[in-house]
Length: 274
View 1: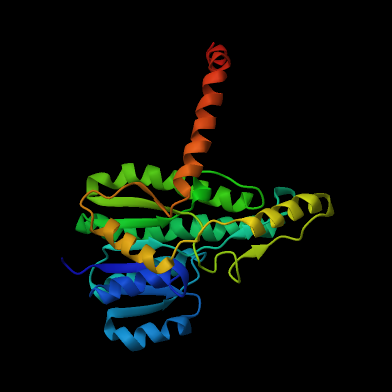
View 2: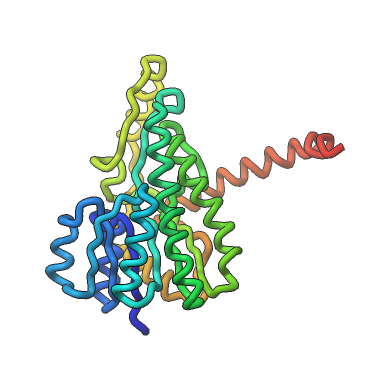
């Protein structure tokens, strides 16, 4: 199989790091970005010229364009662009500050949008390429205490589905990866938490108790790397794909409820037609 050139945001840990390693191990080359490139030093030491470490804050549009151009100039092409950089913002909707909300959207939505825009001219010119957008089961469904995170991933889902239609004629594929719970640091040090309001104390306590009783097995980020390679090597990759055992059941239940409600209220929809 021909060597692929990857551009991966948020490569310092979690999915981004595991996918970068998997690509490098099979002989591909990777432009790996992180806010602190020191977190990539071990990859550079091990894989040498196959890695281009780039400092990047994805919320900086000009920096996104510069980083993508630098990667393309360095390696001569781009084959796989992975928008992985992002974080989880916890907090009930009423608890969120303006900064909480704006920062979440700036990173999870605009960061992915800017990198996508930066890569498209190169992918169009070569008439090939694959954009992987790291979404979430939270981009299909929605859950209490992560509403603004859900909003960011729903936005990512929306523009990416439109994008897939827009660029198919150029030979460019788009895939939304929608993980369930994985053993990454998503809910740990990389997460942000709003200041809780006393009015929601009981709800927060109930949620914490429910989490303590959860028996769901978290996914293995290393195993996800093999899944990503399967997707990028597919002749006709999917627009959407779940990662993990749990998301399909959540989506099926959610969509069954939506369809039932839409059908129940279809007479009102017809009434509104006029």
